[in-house]
Length: 117
Image (cartoon, rainbow, N blue to C red; front, side, top):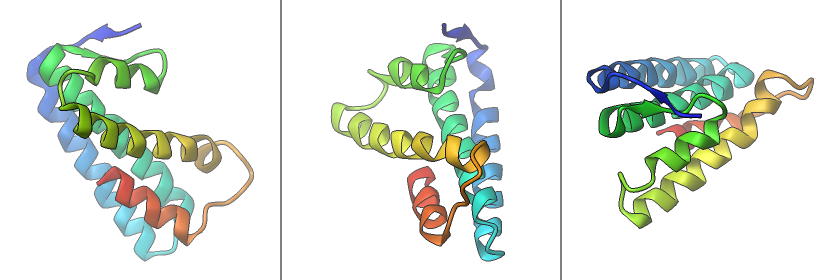
């Protein structure tokens, strides 16, 4: 269920997203692929929170896909579809990078940064 958020706090989510992206890029330079992917994922979720908070005064709280529903109508249909694909790709890596025993590789890390950007 979406949670109400003070829309003036939207820029704070951008600050978080930029920090996560910077950390992801630093992790990639140090061949820390799991950290790269995890931080890219957090960048993506913070970016969606920035959009939904700023434009609708809401953010997803039950699952990250809820944010996709909230963001509809903020972007053009084409922009939304591009963003949805990138976000879905990131979310597909979330579980593996954070909770599963399999390790991320350089390709996973590079792809995740591209999707987060």
